[in-house]
Amino acid sequence: MIETFSLSKVYDKGVTALSGITTTINDRLTAIIGRNGAGKTTFSRIVSTQLEPTSGSAIIDGLDILRDARRIRKRIVSIPQEASPISVLTPLEQVKLYLVGRGLSIKEAHAETIRVLDAMNMRDFKNSPADTLSGGMKRKIFVCMAIASNADIVFLDEPTTGLDPVSRMEVWSSLGELSGEVILTTHYMEEAQELADRVILFEKGRIIEDGTVENLLSKFRGKVRVECPQLDDYDYRIGNRVIKYVNRKDANEYIGLGCKVKPITLDDIFLSHGVQLEY
Ligand SMILES: Nc1ncnc2c1ncn2[C@@H]1O[C@H](COP(=O)(O)OP(=O)(O)OP(=O)(O)O)[C@@H](O)[C@H]1O
Ligand SMILES: [Mg+2]
Image 1: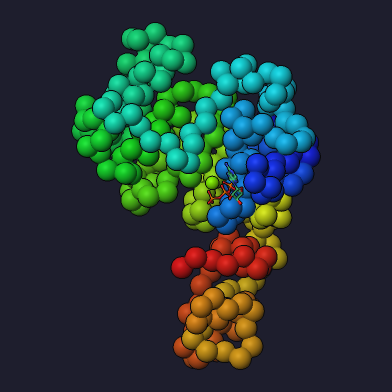
Image 2: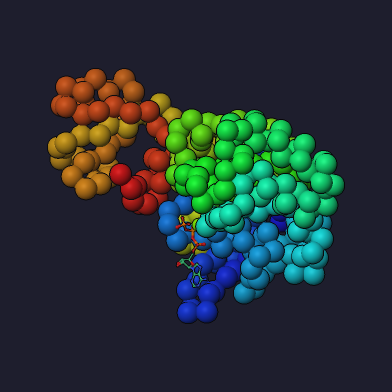
C-alpha cells in the first residue's frame, strides 16, 4: 500500500513537477496516465525512494520513504522509463545477476530466470548480448526482471513503449501473474483500460481524475464519439478533425455526414480535460 501526503516536487530550475499529491494506492494494478511532463515519472521515482520530495511525505507498506528507504527497496522493484541493459550482458546474465543481487542463490536465480525468459518468449535470445537485441527486446529484459523479482510492489514506467503488439500482449499477460501490487505508467489507453483496477490521471503535477475505468467513463454513458471532417457544432478540434459526443441512437445521422463513429475510451477522458491527444 502506498500513502502519500501533500507530496510536492520542485526541481532545481524551479519547475514544479508535483503539487501536493495526497492519495492512497492499494489496488492490484493502478495505471498512471497523463501527457508528457504531467509528473508521472517524478511521482513514481519519489514513492520508490529514488528521488526526495521537496515537501510532503509517503509511506510504503507502513515504511517512510525518507527514514526507511533501504527497507523499502528490498520490498519493491522499480523499472525506470529510460532503463537500458548493460550492452555486453545477455538477458540470462542480466536477469540472473539482478536476482542474485536481490538475495537469491545462483541456482534459484538461474531457475527463475529461465522460467521467466521462457514465459516472455525470450528463449531464443537469452544468450545474445543486449547490444545485439532490438529496442523492444531490451525493454522486455526489464519486464522479466520485474516479474522474476517477486517484489511486493512493482513500479513500471512505460514498460511497453516501443514494443510490438504481440510483445505488449505478452507483457500484459505476465503482469497478471505478478503477485504484488503494480503501479504502471502508460501512454497506451487500451493498456490502462485492459489492465487497471484503478486509473489515475495526472496533469500539471496534480491528480485530475481518479477511479475505476468504469467510473471515469461514466460521464460518457450512452454516448459515442464521432470524428468528422467538417461540423459547425463540435466539442473538440484536433488539427483538422473535429470531435463531438452524441447519443448512440443519433450516431447514424452523423455517419450520413461522413463522420466516423467510435466507442468511448480513456482518450475521451483526456479530451474532456482539454488535454490534446497525439495522433
Ligand atoms: N531532473 C529534472 N530537472 C528539472 N526538471 C525536471 C527533471 N525531471 C523532470 N523535470 C520536469 O518535471 C516535469 C514532470 O516531469 P516527469 O518526467 O515527471 O513527467 P512525465 O509525466 O513522466 O512525462 P513523460 O510522459 O514524458 O514521461 C516536467 O516539466 C519535466 O520537464
Ligand atoms: Mg515519464
